[in-house]
Image 1: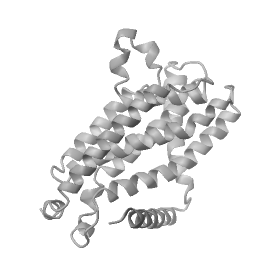
Image 2: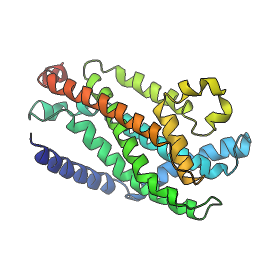
Image 3: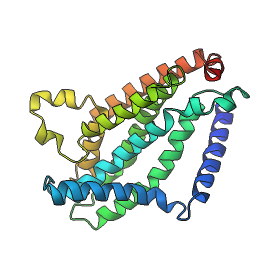
Image 4: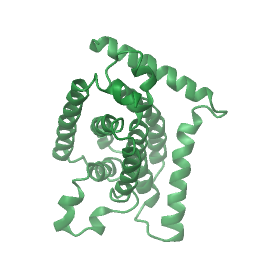
Amino acid sequence: MRFKNFMQLAELYVSSNLRIEVSSYYLNFVWWILEPLLMMCVFYVVFDIMLHQGTDNFVGFLLVGLTAWNWFGRSVGNSKNSIYDARGLILQVRIPKCFFPFVTNCQDAFKHLFVCALLLLFLCFYPTPVTITWAALPVLMLVQFILIFAVSLFCSALVPFVPDLGFVISTGIELLFFASGVFYDLDRMVIPKHSFFVYLNPMAGLIKNYRMVLLYGQWPDWKYLAVVALCSSFFAAVFLLFLRKYDHVYPKVCQQ
């Protein structure tokens, strides 16, 4: 399939799925914003009000971390079964298998834009500076999208062979959530000599950079972002080749 045709089909698939999703609820697209907001409220009540474990400007600190994490966790979780769930279509039409995690990632990225816009609106009235560093936000989001796509390719490529991996991946996402510094400052919790290993988790580093840009008026660590982007691109390329090599195997696997 040509790249142009691939992208046209992806655009059609994403737009139709979003319209179907919106029409399924009384509040339509409001749920795209309301659901993450409810989760943020729960964590705020637990960690800032009940346990008093918040940092300075904890609400903004929490919202930035959860917004970034929710995009990653939701998109990877939704895409891990994307190839396996499309087995009915795979058995009828020959289509690149990377199409299914890609369109899932695009759908979640589109919905994330609404949440991100709401976050920026909130931060405009929050006691943190609105600075020129906000211009780095699109770069951060692009790097995170590449990371999400790489992880989604890895998960969706393996699940059809071992469907039980879906449960393992879900558990891994939950564990990674607590290791990413969503509701606490990793630099305060981890001794300096261990920080290198902590930031091998790319989401920990990305969340830190989001906070640098949006809350502290600092430019992101460009070197770190470049490393994450390059490594994610490399692994995405590896699994794109894997999916291409075993493209003919997936219909057989999905029939089992």
